[in-house]
Image (tube, rainbow, N blue to C red; front, side, top):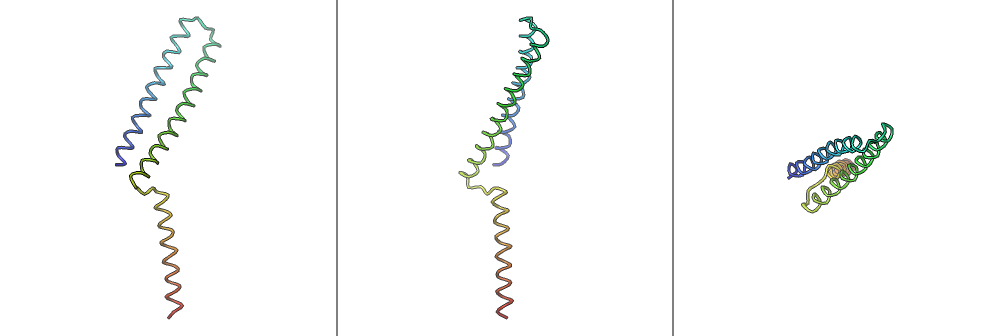
Length: 104
């Protein structure tokens, strides 16, 4: 099940990376055709890069949120939940051990 989630996330990331390359090529082509100055072209590419980075960040947040929701619906324990349970078990063992020691 986790394999499917990983593959879906990697596919989404791969698609966004392809889109980035295509956007950069398109930007360069537009710069050449529109006869922008080097300064204007650099600014244009920087703006595109900023938009891409923002979109990438939002995409990653959505993927993480979707994965969390999926795991919750599938009733799969997360790493944080497992660590919490282990901590509780250790604390209960200590409490039981103290009770056993004091009753002897």
